[in-house]
Image: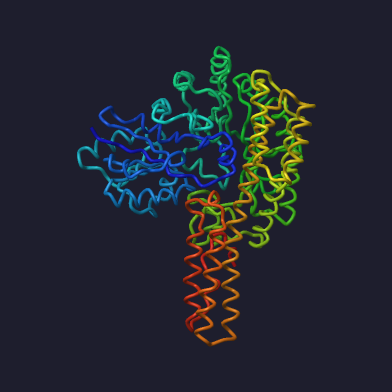
Length: 588
């Protein structure tokens, strides 16, 4: 028997991950590693399998001693954690096999991997295992075509402890009919939306139910409605399944904005138990939407089409979460206030705002490469890092972005709770979706949040709970859940501010050293300054809360670069201040 260790590297904290909100519930991660669990179902029975999700449990030396092979699947933000996993496996000579979206795009730049099994692996993984067992395995395996989804197995949820997760997840389709300029989904999965059959999905719903899961269930499709015919076949089947079992799952998914044009399908989603949908709204700027090739977000007959769409979906009974982008070519200085105004007025509590990133292989990457606007730097985890030259002044763009997230997730949470109230004022409280809970459970939830809020947040939270209790009592459980998510978003915003300010402090210290050095040639003065500067920097580093640190946060690297730069500046050489490699540094 061969021991196969399936390792899922750690995600950095994100707005989507709800790390701090989950901590209120004693839950460790938002979602299980669906890709790895799907691959686990492709192993023959002659393999012993063990899953280690680093978002839930550490990778122990005993795991590596047990393993004959290590398999990983990652997305781009998991890169720093993956590198640590690979280094540990290399050290004890456990072969590493890597797959997933990140290696599929960047495998040529990755080191320490023995074999890459890239793209969608339903057709290639069995071949790889046979080659591996015969000693003829190649370094890289690519899928010859997009596989039929009917070949996808039921994921091995039995290999994880489901109590450690807030939501389970399943996949119905892959691919998207749209081809937005910045998006890599069509490059990875194609523009033809391939789906599983209703029977396959019922089998997966059944498996989760048999294993005891009750609660949130995320359908992870990048565009759930990409194949309208097939999703229309699925929804009545799921609605009947849910009804027969008392609606054990609260469903949510991702979709394109043109969902609002499918009235009957939205009704079917409500019947099936969908309570939330994530929309790629991107920007209220129609000119920028046209430039990014996003026609599904435009309607020439309605200049407020995006706002109207959000409101109609809310009125059906689904909360809208939204993705937004700053740094688009047709953004101007008004883009920041426009984003804030839209998010607030539409009542989108969870708004994921990010700077535009040029992902390798996308149409945006190709265009920017042609225009000589790509920067020679990797895609970074730091939210303020740019890997291309924007049309807007970079400093203005980054400062504007920070103002947007600092406003929608302000320190008092007042703007956040205002959005929640707008949502609740417009949300249809469908009975089988918004079920009552006991007063005891509500009390525990409210008090758990109160204990973690700052003194500035408590009065706003109290007024919010009182207003919801009076005006929307059926929606109070949702309101409490939203409050926990707001707590997470504000704390994450604060975390990113602390990390960014530490890096800015190092840059300022180095600039001060450069300035002082111009007036003194005494080596002793320079040595004293270096010693004291390093002491101050280490003291500030120790002051960063441990809970704010994560793999890839750039703190250790920035401090090492600071030390090196100080030593270099102490010698008579050309200044290197402009080359200090701080994460989030604004390009010239």
